[in-house]
Amino acid sequence: MTVPRADLVVTARARADRRTKDLVKRLEAGEIAVVNHSDIDLVAADALVDAGVVAVVNAAESFTGRYPNLGPLQLVRHGVILLDEVGLGVMELISEGEVVTIDGDRLLIADDEVAVGHRQNEDDLVARVSEARSNVGQQLELFASNTLEYLRKERHLATDSPDLPPSTVQFKGRQTLVVVRGIDFREDLLALHRSGYIRELRPVLIGVDGGADALLSLGLKPHIIIGDMDSVGEAALRCGAELIVHAYAGGRAPGAKRLRELGLQYLLFESTGTSEDIAMLLAYERGTELIVAVGTHNSMEDFLDKAPPNSPSSTAGATMGLRRWSPAVWPAGP
Image (cartoon, rainbow, N blue to C red; front, side):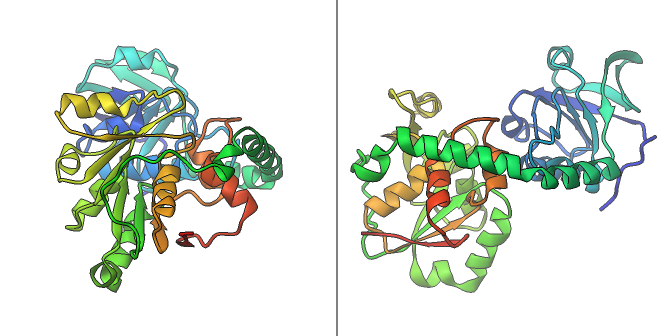
C-alpha cells in the first residue's frame, strides 16, 4: 500500500457521477473519480481502488463520524488522493473525460481554480475512526430503536406468507448460495469455489445485483438474478438466469425499465427491505435446506454503511437484532 503525499500534485482525466456504483463501470485506470457520496463505504472504496483511480474528489463528506466508516481510510491506504467536501457545484462543472488537476486542497481545470476542499490523510482518518468507535453506543441505541420501530410497522412480514413471484427454479432438496456485492464477497466466494462446495453440492445460485457478475467471473452461471438491476453487467443479465426485479411498496420497480429496454423477460417481487433480504426470503419460503450467504450485511456497521442516516433497519437488520445468525451460513427452510 502507498499512502499519497500531502504535497503530491496529480493531473488526469476525470469522470463524474452522483452514483458511485454507476461511475465505477466507466472509470479507467489512472483517472480521477468525482462523486457525491457521504460516508464512502468500504464496498464503494474497494470498487474505486479496483478501478485503478489515482484520486477521488467528493462533493460530500467522505467521513462524517456517524460511525467508524473504513472506506476513506481504505482509499488513502491504497495511495488514492481523497479531496473532500468540494461542494455539489463540481458535479456540473466537469465534463466526461475532462482533464483536471488536484493541487493541495484545490481542484483546477486549465489552471483555473474551480473548487476547494479538504485533502484527507491517513493520520487524521485513523484518529476519526477511533473517535467514532468510542461514540458507537449512541448509534447502537438509534439502530436498535429503528429496528424495533420497523418490526412494529412491518410485523406482517414475520407473520404473513409473502406473495412470491412464480419462480421456476427448484429449491426443495437443495442448498442456496446468495452472493451480495458486500465486504470481502470476492474472497469468500472464491474460498467456497475452491473448497468444492459449489461443485459437489450444486446449490441454487442467486446473484443479488452485482453479485451475479462475481459468479460469472468464476465461470458460475447464476440460476436467479434479483435486485434493482442497476449494478449488474449486461452479460450477466443475458446469461439465461431467471430475472427477478425488486419492486417496492406500491409496485414501484425502477429496475424494470432497464430490462424492458434490453428486451428481457422478468418477474416482479414486491417487498420492503433490501434486495438481499428478498433473495433469502425467496429461498426460505421455497423450502431450501440451507442458505449460504457471502457479502451480506450482518453487523451494525454494515447496515450503517448501506443505509442513510436515521433510516429504518432492513428486514435482515430487524432479524439480526432478534436472532443470532452465523455470519456466513444460515439455516433455512420450514
